[in-house]
Length: 340
Image 1 (cartoon, rainbow, N blue to C red):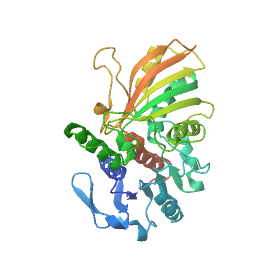
Image 2: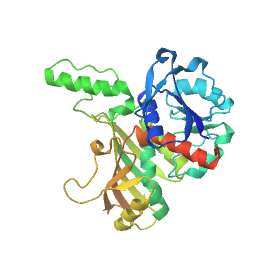
Image 3: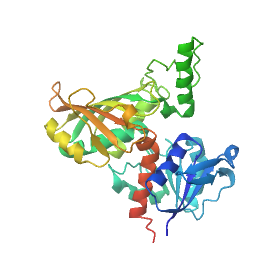
């Protein structure tokens, strides 16, 4: 006997990726419902290579009888429909930012804080973290266990897919316009993204940081350790899929880079590719479509007492969103919703 799963936002990038990953990981589902806005009702989406699902409209979708709903439709949809699903007895795993900092909603990365999922019963809702936070804390967790992290300085290089289909379309359109000498038009991004980088993701806050940078700070504190100090600079780059991060870590205890490398190699969800030679590291092109968070360029930072630098790359549509949500569903099943 398997689970009944609803994927809300099934026609979007992350929703489609959730359907792919449910199939790839052979999630034990007897039924999967594809749910989206009424505009998409009747649209075909695919669950793996052989199964086609008809999209159902969320307006009149009945969540009762479903075990888990994976929400990938944004904060406005989650605000309206996640409580309805939760009240109907369906556990919501939400990819939006809406519930992340709610003290009654666990914010989960299964490789990092699996025990926190036990608090889901307060609201029947579990939050999925921001894409840039998710891959970073996967890398930080084993190192924190090794030597206790004191401070992190991270610069992100985030792909346009983090801004949805419109972001990918704008990069494609602007790149083509450059080559044919057409006018460059900005709609999704504040400045030209083709052949450029933009140090601005989400809205600006009063202290000069952006909301994306704020998210990395508060989410890391909630997921990993409230005492970790973190400074982030989040940058949009002209890459279609895959977020990269340059991470500088200061520890409370001495850290040997070889020991750190060995610990990371043994950690769940991580692949270490770290050769000090041409091509001995991973870039977004190589990580796209993969489950792993890749770590490269591990080296000592002698400017602080116990410092380490590393390079972290992951598919933001997968570990940063859809994969993490499915992994949460798997964890929830193992610990609380056992079937059969």
